Amino acid sequence: MLRPQELGEGEREHWRELRAESTAPRNPFMEPEFTDVVGRVRPRARVAVVYDGGEAAGFLPHERGPLGQGRAIGLGVSDCQGAVLRQGLAPDLRELLRACSLSSFAFDNLEAEQELFVPAAADEHTTYVIDVEKGYEAYENVLRAQSPKFLKSTLAKERRLGRQAGNVRFVFDERDPAALRTLMEWKSAQYRRTGRRDRFAQEWIARLVARLAGTRAPECTGTLSVLHAGGRPVAAHFGLRSATVLACWFPAYDPEFARYSPGLVLHLRMAEAAAAEGIGLLDLGRGPAEYKDALKTGELPVYEGAATRAGTGAALHWLGREPARRAHGFVRDRPRLASLAARTLKGAARLRRS
Image 1 (cartoon, one colour):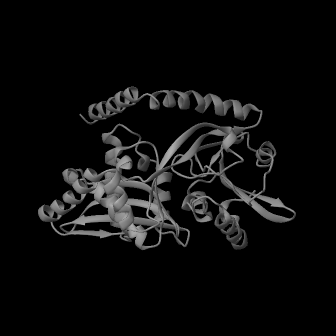
Image 2 (cartoon, rainbow, N blue to C red; image 1 turned 90 degrees about the horizontal axis):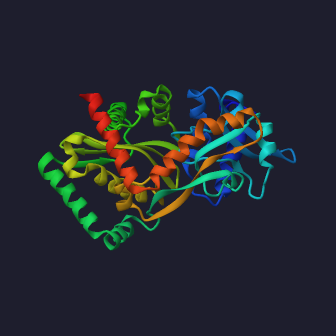
């Protein structure tokens, strides 16, 4: 059991090799660099190193809470979770939890190929993806076939943005810290406007994103993309990319330019730039949204739940999370209730601002 910073370079390289051998997309949230940065802002972060025959054969990054209540590394912000195991290795789950001194291991974006933990899942969710493996032009052809009005209107808005606001310019990998601060301000305002918890008001998340913005590794690079018009930023996105996957994370735009749909334009340009870089997949994350329905080419399953072993910690996990999870699921599965809940959140947000 190690802190992320205590892993040697040999162990980190072996971790990368195991991910390279996996059949799952090479999501940057599953790389040792992400775990390392989480460990620098979350002191309870740990990595269990699983040995088989004297050789490191797997890694389980996690965070340990009171009474051994464990959670996936970066739970709440990480969009891909699970163990990194040698193919064919199947440790006993409860023995693994016991060895980690964990009574439970909670996850909310478990990777589909996680055979060790999927049986413990309580819910299956959908993550939406854009496939640009065959290039951006092929992706545009897919959009023309499945949603021609969307593509035509978005491209028309991009041209109108250029005519009315000034020259449109896109930067795929912006390094200016001021641009990241602008994005975080927009996103915080969006959270407040829609009545949701402001993630960037949580110090550890703000610090995590700031550190990841400076992370440069072949399979985990912080990537800030910015759409400019007339010399000023109008939309931006921060995410992580590997050589083959761009994990979309925090998109936002300036509401002053909402009529031009700058967020949609931004995503099209991100897809174009990603394809040019040899990236084949953009992962838009779980949770339904109109813009995801318009942009997606496919869907992948992710799972939510917790693996547990008998004990007080497991009981406390159930009491602390399960009632709320079931309530959220009840609302989410009923579109009219979900729409009413969203309107209620926005109304409450307006009252707080007045």
